Image (tube, helix red, strand yellow):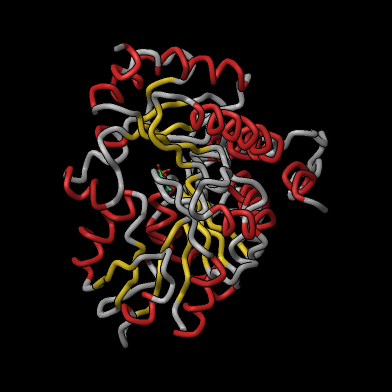
Length: 385
Ligand code: PLP
């Protein structure tokens, strides 16, 4: 089966007395035993649940992994991966990483006796210098947020293999449709299913997909013990969402390309970051490892922070909101939203100027999106003069 067929059919055959085409929601905390000698396949929903198991089977198939553990959020999936570390271990973390991951690594892992070093994932050679005798894991993501730089997944995974450490990638921005990191050598793929997998901005969820049974067993045992289970209804919504992942991603990518090209031509735009543009510094790596270039675009407005804020507050189709990956288009102002926890100095170092805006390009009509940005950009002072 190919991607779109797997998304619609894996684990979803009609079953039970009524053969429903759409599997039911098993909204039950516990399941009855026929007798003490005959334990049910599912007995308690913190441990496992049929609706969750269906979602896990689909995501494992879409990522080409051995098995998947779904969690109540993307952060819990990242915590599941970190559960493989123990007191005395060392972690390598890409410096360009989601703020929530940065927070766990900086504030929670040190309390557990786990140290870390940040490295530049766009320079895989830096792994050789950052590695320590007790390094056990590396975590990175691509495309990065908010500058949409691309990291060579195969190069990072092979460095991890060489050093015998677990390679974890956050694949949220790409989605399983655009990039399958296990085939490129990664050990664990995490997703915030809140984003493209769910696709409709109506759930919070996560998934950790393991390449091998050994790693899967560890993730499962941790999630069951800690109790990170998502609810059955959220899993059912994610299953409904993931069925259309391929068609949604095709449209997200086409719209994002059209928006990026229009922005690149706009006189009030200083710079556009989109890996699909030939002008993007990592376009060649993106073309090598991704099926298409994604639905996220960021751009720098000419002028001041006030101009960028005015644009963010002036769009009518793009809604000013956190998050990404839903069918609706969102605009974000990283300095006050996704990257507000960083100081201005840290943001400048990370290449996040006060004139940067981030778009999660949805699946509306591309021309409506372009016209919306054009009317908002008309308010930039450089043009008004
Ligand atoms: N990873 C990335 C790349 C994200 O953008 C996010 C959330 O924005 C997360 C992980 C965390 O996901 P959640 O909000 O579902 O916990």
